[in-house]
Figure 1 (cartoon, rainbow, N blue to C red):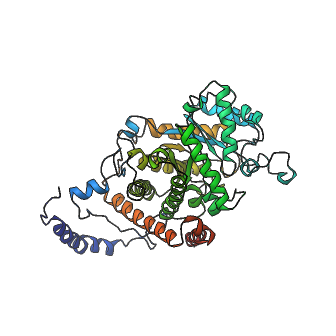
Figure 2: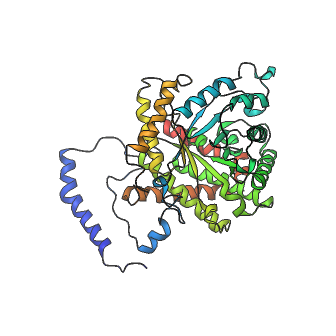
Figure 3: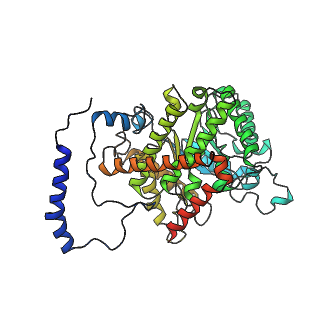
Length: 458
């Protein structure tokens, strides 16, 4: 029930004007503000001070609410990290399966609680390592997997039933998933019990990444077929990780990262429904993948806004009934474009700040980049330090002790509202193009990101 208007909003406004006249103005005369614009990392202007917004109990319940409950602004689990910490999932892939397996074993010994596979480009677009077309590319940006034997080597002595795996693979997702299922069967694990994630997000490949083999419509048929298979036979497997990370790293703003990612999700949900899948049978296994950049408050607000907007879309547009369908569960990776080859020790500080933003924003799993990744594949020492960053946040910072600890901040709530509104407008613009596939084919999304990247670079 809304509180009656007691005039408090009017009194705050009057007090603000008095403060500006008698306190702020003299202070600015003595010491003017720095002569540069104050903006978020995405370039949105920031006020010097944020105040309570006119609100009511009803507005709070509708817009913010409680964790584990619609609209999930404050988190998708009722207990969040007080019940279970985020999965510490470090992304790794060396040239050979043997080398990569050694790195995975090392990560698990150091306390990593999940694995994430980086494949090389030939594997990502469906070429065997001995194909002349990929000479010089094999094993350069990830592990080369051409055969089942390679996959067996990659997961040798790793219990896939106890450690969940995320595979960053799209065009050839069905092939790599089939290999992984064989590994599970070889270890005596029923595939119905297998937990993990396949990225399987083709739309962002046309926008920001480029590892596609077919035009959008044929690619989406393969994506759809994986949805159907996983829904029927792999109840614990996430059949897609809808990725905003790559678009943000290409130059998108925080609002664009939300809007374009959720527009992609709408397209995937539409094709799943058209394939005959019930929304509440399919949607609970959707996951998402975002970046965490260095503007702490904007990033926290971004995650909160994405959860709320997604929950509304699933409830109002797709008529989901199961609360799990409305939960935006996501993995976060700290920003790669923020890393510098010069003074790489500074990257440790950047990564810690970005990881804190992901945790305060309620991520379900996290990869922390290594200090030397702008130079080479990370050393064991760098990998250990990156993982220790997460562990210090989990056990020493207090960030995991309270749910949505920045919720209620005047700044955070204002940024959350603004990012949600801007992201929703991008979704409407894409629908004006005829949907995400048409927006990609018309170049709308690519132009928006290019313009944002250009403006950021000025």
